[in-house]
Image 1 (spheres, one colour):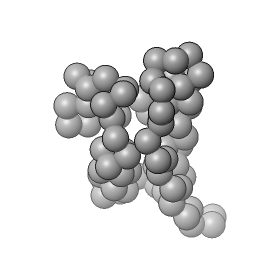
Image 2 (cartoon, helix red, strand yellow):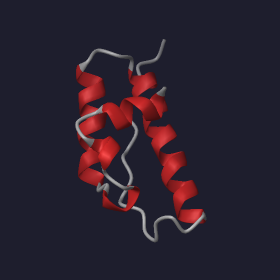
Image 3 (cartoon, one colour):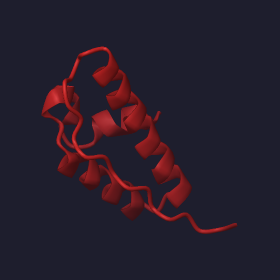
Image 4 (tube, one colour):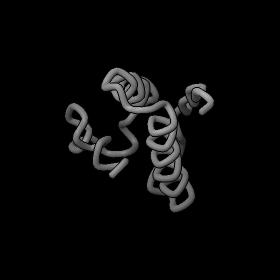
Length: 77
């Protein structure tokens, strides 16, 4: 579900992993936060993307990873 939201955001589904820059991931993070979902859910989306890019780096699908997003501070509850 997390990756599906990423690929359906803007035209990211037609962009290869090596063309995705940090700025694109920031747009997604801010967009998700603006939709009103909980900060912890936004952080789960960020972690899912981190996993995809880490795996792509390990398997040499990409050769460098753009700077990664900072998590948002979740409200205690």
